[in-house]
Image 1 (cartoon, rainbow, N blue to C red):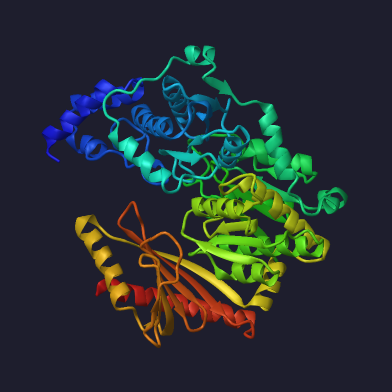
Image 2 (image 1 turned 180 degrees about the vertical axis):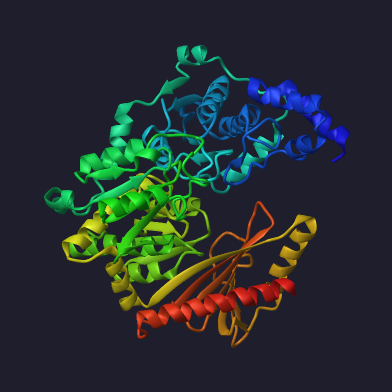
Length: 583
């Protein structure tokens, strides 16, 4: 885009933006003739995709700011008005601890009010799963969560939910995107006082908070054990400066399990001052928690991300602390939940387990061993929510538990997005149950490996630069699709699943069957002869391919031998991937 066009877009933005901080940022850039920075901020409109939008905070069309939030909300309002009866038009809104989250949430609320749509706004920051719960409990037609999840401090975002409390899926997502992209010009927002006087803006109250906590506490499978021995387990918790403190501490108090919260990370803070990256799956983010856990000789360390939808944990193994992967924690929770329900005779008829196509099949095998039907959906928790809705509509299965490899889990159906609050409560209960039977969490995991075989996962990302990089990425996927490899890093390939075509190719016979009943998605999955799975999935928002490797070693092998074998294969896989990238 030419400098003249960039300046024209910047001048237009100045006429639309009302927040003084963002307005002055752009005015100053124009005054300084900083074309390079202006180009970064105006070369495109920030993309509103199927999951909403996420970006750097700042003035400009390619940033998150009050004008961009207003545009997105006006698009949502237009869609609601055209698809939802007037009497049912109500939206729940909440926000996390990030900079401007409260401002953006109120802006969204007042735009909806200007469109005669009623709004329930949380009085302070709340967790993403609480927003999902609120949509359902308050009978709303939609929900908005202002969050950038576990992104660095400079980011914020905007997620849209539909009436079932799950993130929007087709046809609503595409319809909302179309409406958002058609919004131009200034967007009106009602004055807050007027919105409140007209009963178009109301605040949620403590009754809803208490109901959510009671729901989470009520999911306990071993309340007698907790009542008798809950004080015997020592749990360290860090909310990483996010929303988790409010509900996690409240739930644990009502359950009767003492919780030691990392004091330096307890208070919400959009700067995330003690971590570079508030991601609960990384050792760096858990460093303070690990130090406290060692000092306290704790049994479990848990961490939630800023909007409390993802849970990471670490557990002791001898003198060391081990960070478990999302796949491993998912396997442990799957086993504990299905095992306990079956032992107590409380497993519902036609129980179901759901995870995504890039999540370890280890979990599916565990669930199936207890008589559950297991289902795999496309990447994204919204598809798990969609599957639950299908079960309810046709009364075929009863959802029990599900999750994805990226540390997101859902217990029960009161929430329709990943819920780190309920996952934390169930994880602590699982750890206490293990303690009661004289085992550690790691010993529980090894028990599962001895029964179902050893599983270990690796995520490898490969990035591409510029338009030429995008073309290279697309060519690589096309090549893998049209000429699938006979082996991957020395392991023969048995099947290739093509989620774009909805087909499975048998590599030995060459027979192709149209047997995948999922929405079309540019994902290729290679099932190896030994049961391992390699999945290639390009990013939908940036020039990057992710390769998900799920390596399986038969249970007949000794654990250390299996670990060594998998480690060697992962090294070979890296070399193989480098080779196909160069070709």
